[in-house]
Image 1: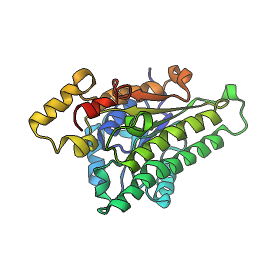
Image 2: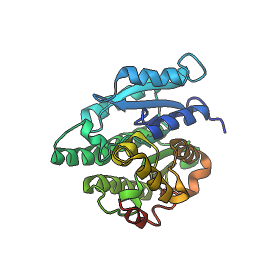
Image 3: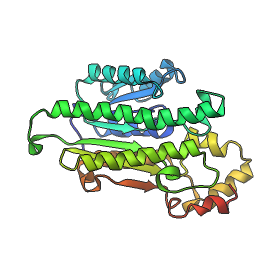
Length: 282
């Protein structure tokens, strides 16, 4: 289904596995995409490499903009949001994908207590601030029009099977709490928007082959340990980022409306059998 180019989606965390795949998938569907990269951690050069990879001078070049964002600081979030509006003039969707994990939070702080605070600031509070700005912008765009006259809008937030769906032994408390907060935010905003054009969802991926999961889990394993770990996962494989991107793309279509408010377990069954992690000895 091809969408008008005027429909604009924000995708945060665009340089990571799921974010990169999502930007590519939405561009293929005809969306214009305002993509964020991690200010102070990822460089503008890395961001421009993504644009070149997608065809800076090709069919997608005029439908993607790149913006720095630090979700730990409200000033950065507000500057990012103002940049996006200056570039596109309107918004139709927000994909809250940017986050830090148990290992990648070390890019921001080395001390454990500071890391815990950042997990909550970035994953929960920062995501909340950006979401509130997005909803406020939608209300400005809606004005006084009747519901039947308003275009659909979409909010998709990435949580995690750990925290969002189930509890796993040894999962870092601040990490799980931040992901649980995203799931709660989704349900609450959905409850408040049953009579508006905004559809709200959360996705809880399981063991996905991203840099974040590699850093937190896979990199410390030997080849034999990794093979044994993957063999015990649901379907005996890792989830691939384009699979989550495909789900996001669906949620941004009109066909997803009946799922309004859903917190979706996208773990291939790990959320239904979290004991697999214990059974594997991890």
